[in-house]
Amino acid sequence: MALYAAAAAVLAGVESRQGSIKGLVYSSGFQNVKQLYALVCETQRYSAVLDAVIASAGLLRAEKKLRPHLAKVLVYELLLGKGFQGRGGQWKPVLGRHQARLKAELARLKVHRGVSRNEDLLEVESRPGSASQVPRFVRVNTLKTCCDDVVDYFKRQGFSYQGRASSLDDLRALKGKHFLSDPLLPELLAFPAQTDLHEHPLYQAGHFILQDKASCLPAMLLAPPPGSHVIDACAAPGNKTSHLAALLKNQGKIFAFDLDAKRLASMATLLARAGVSCCELAEEDFLAVSPSDLRYRQVHYILLDPSCSGSGMLTRQLEEPGAGTPSKERLRALAGFQQRALCHALTFPSLQRLVYSTCSLCQEENEDVVRDALQQSPGAFRLVPVLPSWPHRGLSTFPGAEHCLRAAPETTLTGGFFIAVIERVEVPSPVSQAEALAPELTPSPAPKRKKRRRKAAAGASTSLGT
Ligand code: SAM
Image 1 (cartoon, rainbow, N blue to C red):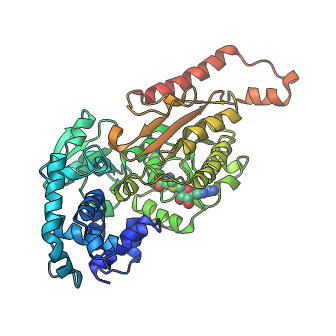
Image 2: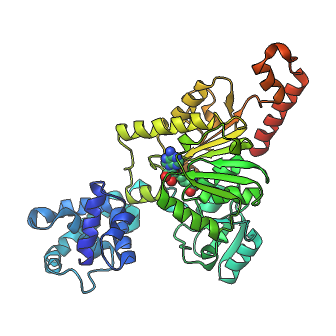
């Protein structure tokens, strides 16, 4: 299939929700996927502008055989892209007939909106602070290397290191071959948004992981110390698992579950590349994992990052600006699973701290899930107030919801994300367990001891919040 026809078919598929741009490009059979992907993304970025120009030039009224998606691709190439460059087939002379009118309509649109450059015509979604402006974050894999070595490597490659960013504005201003350390996460480096590091030798060797900053927060906030036992309930493809392993320094154990065999296979590759040796992978439904299994008796930490609508995902926002709101039925099904998974996780007897996260923007998958799960075990767990200076908080739909974190390109220069840190209020002790079984045989717990436990928990929360 010719490039423009292939691009039009992908655009039509995206519009009718047959898949993402990336998925449809790969399944299109078109040989040069990079070229096709770039053309589709750019046409989509200028979609509203192209619609306006095509409509006011009366192109589709005049050319009845020209389908709207193909028209959009052709007009993009003619006015904003590289020109037809020997392509265009039967449509080249047709577009040629309309060229002057199309150009005039584009110029008129710019005058009307008071801008001089094509980029300034882009809708709000494509402007600074939007998904396309989010830096390319690089998490240094401390199992294999250290930040200084990675920084030096990039410097030797001609990148210019600007030190630690002091604010989001520093990250926003990144361009060219400059890069920075993130102000919050010590092992995170930030490069300009368009930097492509997928072919970088250090990435290929597992010395760094390409992971959005928001997606690094769950493991960082769970903060399991080396030696501890952790469950990663919905783990594939494993970015957060590898982060957990780095925090554990490969000491201790991660029990990682996922239902999807294919995703688990790529996870195994990712973990091997990242040098993770403390993880047990299992193709298992987390809901069927028994909390009373003795293997999990020392699990004090659980990361629950369940399947979600993905409405906050950067790729989705870039590909389908303004889209991504799932149907009510899908939301209900997802939220039902998320809630069952969270309630199940809270039944692990030794659990002390849990992080619940999604890359969804929907309240139903976030605050509502957390509220309902906490309500089901009243007084047993609480939300931990983390990162007080984080600017984007949970929606105030219930008391304490502001302890949750939200993330979005406009507010935190990251993908859309939600995180709740949940902690057990009373750590079960042999004394209280025995008391529960035979209250008449055991003395009351010493009040001093109880107080110390609470203090320790509060201390943990505070140290994370700085
Ligand atoms: N935490 C992962 C990471 O950072 O790379 C991403 C997890 S992804 C959002 C959700 C995962 O949950 C999917 O891989 C999906 O296969 C898995 N999943 C869905 N239902 C599950 C279940 N009942 N038990 C275990 N895993 C499940």
